[in-house]
Length: 337
Image (cartoon, rainbow, N blue to C red):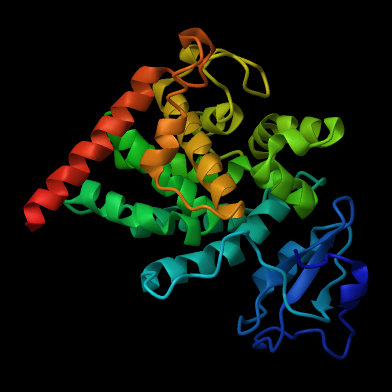
C-alpha cells in the first residue's frame, strides 16, 4: 500500500497555484484530516476552472497539496489487462475524477447543496450506464461479456455492472431502474471515502480482522450516506435513497445498519444487496490473489450447510441469477458455433 503520510505531500505554494484556464502539469490533492488521507482533486492534464475553484472554496480547509511521490491509486483494482476495452479505461478515468468532487460535497459539513456537483453525478451515472449497459438489443450478452472485466473496472462501474446483470436475472429491464441503481451505487459508499484506506482494505480482505471500532464505522456508513445525500442532494429520488440505506440488509436480518429482514424491502433493494455481496466476494478473492467469476461467487452464496432462514439471501434470488447466467452463456456460445 502506498503511504498516506503528510510528509509525502507539500502545500501548493502561491507561485504554483493554478490560474483559471491553466492546464495542470501535476496532480493536485486535498486532505481529509479526520481520516488522515489525501484525495486527488484534479488530475495532471486537466484544466483548472471556475467550477473546481468554487467547490474548493466551500470547504473549511481549502489548502491544496501536490504529491512528492507517485500518486496513490484511487481504487484498489489491479492494473488494467492489455485486452481491456478502451471504453472501460476511459470510464475508469472519468469515475476517478468525478467521484472525488461528489464525495466532497456529500461529506461537506456545511451541508450546502451544489447544483454543479449534482449535474456531475447525473452525468457520471449516465456515462456508466452507457458503457456497461448500452441501449442495444443484445444487452444480456453484452453484460455477460463485460463481466470478465469486473476486477479492472472502477468499483462503482463494477458494482453497477453486477447489479444490472443481477437485476436482469430477477426480471427487471427498465432503463430507469438501471439509472437508479447506478446513482445509488455512486453515492452509497461516499462516507466510506473518509475512512483510512487500511480499514477499507481490511474490510475487503477479511472483515473478521476489523477492530470493534472499525467495524462500527463500516456498519454506520449506509445510514450516514443516506442522511448526507437526503440533506445535501435533495433532488435524489426516494427509490435511490432506499437503495443507499438498505444495500447491506440481508435475508437473515444480520445485515446493517438496521438489521432488517430484507424480504420486507422492495425487490430491487434485495437485488442490489445480492450484487453488493457478489462484488465483495470477488474483491476479497482478487485481493487475496485468486480471481473468480460471478458464477463462482454466486455459488458461495448458496450456503448449502446453513439453515434456510439463516442464509444471507433468499435462495430463489441466488438460483435465478445462476440459472439466468448459465442459460444466457449457453445461448451465446450456441449462437457462435
